[in-house]
Structure formats: C-alpha cells, structure tokens
Amino acid sequence: MAQEIERKFLVLNDTFKRESFKEKRIIQGYLSSVPERTVRVRIKGDKGFLTIKGIGNESGAARYEWEREISTDDAQDLLDICEPGVIDKTRFNVKSGDHTFEVDEFYGDNDGLTVAEVELSDEKEDFDKPEWLGEEVTGDVKYFNSMLMKNPYKNWEKV
Image (tube, rainbow, N blue to C red; front, side, top):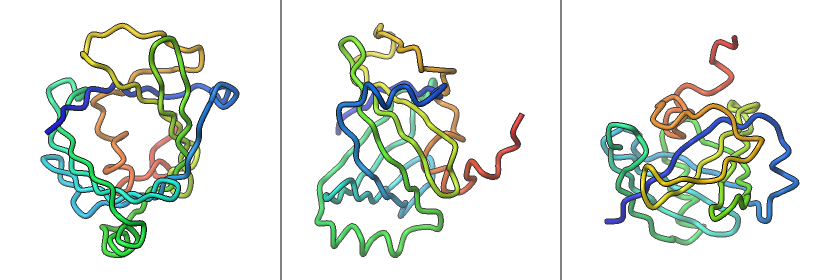
C-alpha cells in the first residue's frame, strides 16, 4: 500500500487559473467516510476510480492510499449508493518550482471554497509557495472532502 504525503492550503484568489496547465471536472462520493478508512468513488473527466484511504498520521500530512481505475459506468452506479453529499469540483494542476499543486475549486454546497494540495516525498520537504497560496490547513478535518459532504462550506460560520 502506498503512502500519500501532502499538505493542504487555502487559496487567496483565482490567479492560479492563469498558471494552470490542466483542469478536470470531478464528481465524487463516499461509500464510507469514517476517518479510519474512507472509501471514495470518483469520476474524473472521463475515467472512474475507487480509492481507499487510511487514517492520517498525527500531523494529517501522511496516510495510506489505494486506488484503482474502474469503468465510468461502475463509478456512476456506485455514486448512486454513496452517502449523501456528493462533491462537485474542478481540479486545476499548477506547476510551482519542482512541484505541481492540485487546486480544487468547489461548487454546489461548497461553492466559494478553493483549496490547494501539494504532494511531497517527505513531510518536511521544501517547496516554492506561489503568491496565491494562503493559510495552511493540513490536518484540519473540516477541509477533508469526506467531511465537506457532511458539513459543507455553505454551513460554516463566516468571520
């Protein structure tokens, strides 16, 4: 099983879109959203995926992940039986230095929320921080997609 190490940040503005070299619409749901093991079904562009993630480490930056491509028909059938609260977003890929950020702009009940993740080989690995990158929210469970379906951004108290 592979270990995923990533850090997550809020995004300050949409200037990242000018730097994006790829974007795909993503629809995803959860067959299981318990923190110990999330089971996610996703349609990303024209491909389907089934992903299982384990519980994160203390910082929330590292956790186990298993993913396999499945047919889009199977993914759609599985989305139909997922827990309530499907996630709808566009993912933008943005190069910054030696790393690629995945920037998710959410729609529907999470409209107005944009977060960026960078995958690292080590939790303490240095990376270039683009000007549009805001506060780090790595490990803050309310920003996990599996939690955004239960408590969407539209329900958060805005300061």
